[in-house]
Length: 315
Image (cartoon, rainbow, N blue to C red; front, side, top):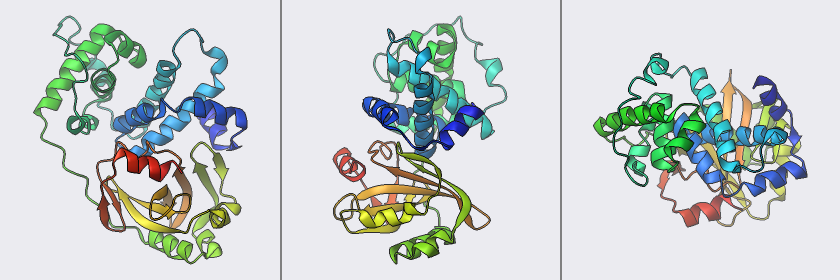
């Protein structure tokens, strides 16, 4: 996995064959990102993992059995990456492995159709990873028990046990509160102020020389000087604004690729010692904000329906 990750991070501009492979997966992307977002608890971490899973699938196409559906195979790759992410975040319950098969012999009637509504879906991050994955795959995305077992690397009995525990816990949880907005970091405010003055040298001063840049489905590598000046070629007037998505401070590009104040991109900055170390530039991905519960731009909460999301992030 580290070698694959390094290869992804050093890709540069993705070639036409890979771009075509990504385009062929357009119908899968909203479900894949939503699953990863619910597993990780972040729409941005979820999108990052979905992109990495698609790249990994592309690099392993020679191992894929073309007689089988592509979506479950990529979902399995994404699931494994989600589990690795959770382990790295040290949030996985220490007793998880001991509990997985505890109730395999006890069957209970299976509800028909998706069982978890959107309100409960946002609570799944409070479950251990196995229960979380089974609830999402079976009850949200309506995979069968056998398909869920294959995706999570368990048995049908293990999935039933995880579902029983997870459903019981979800039913007892209080409603999830909306995420609270966070104060924008000072570096964000500096970045916005210099960006909107088109002071590109001033913006570069905020970015470390070895910083990394990822533009969704377009580029992964170092931050080139042309990254900032490219904005000047956009067809519509644009400005950068402070945003907050589910309690995480981000930058929001308004205009540029879209008319008026529609959202063209969301930019997430990783910062260390007062400098930007990584830029995540999300654009042309209308599914990104679908799982978000709270979207704030310039201090004003936005309620974006699907049509608005499509118009905003599909430019």
